[in-house]
Image 1 (cartoon, helix red, strand yellow):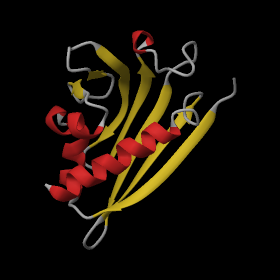
Image 2 (cartoon, helix red, strand yellow):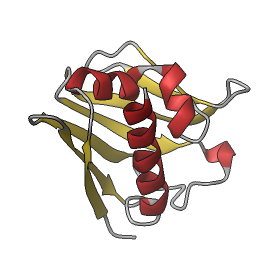
Image 3 (cartoon, helix red, strand yellow):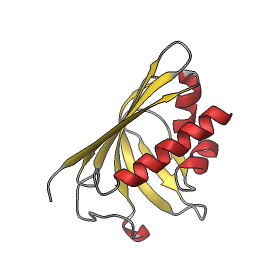
Image 4 (cartoon, helix red, strand yellow):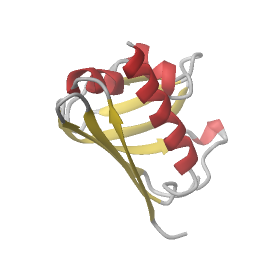
Length: 138
């Protein structure tokens, strides 16, 4: 299977720090990332885990780049036990979030690169739309 890419962007009516907080706060990720709570030490090289309500790992990766509150880049691999990985033997994808402030909103760009990018593009788009809704209503 060949490597693919998926990129989407949204204008979110919120401050940059609020959007960043939505990416790293487990109380917020569980509201938009398929019920999972994110867990990490939020340092370059540290692991990042998306935990199901029963504390099993839904997906995991490593922080490749972190520049709070502007940019977050992680590797990403769905759990093999979850059954939702369309490419179970593929190397981790790379997921990047870029948050660019504007006057009354931020332009947020989500990019996914790797073999799962296109097969999971609908899931990424849904999570991104749900994150926008969570951030804007808070």
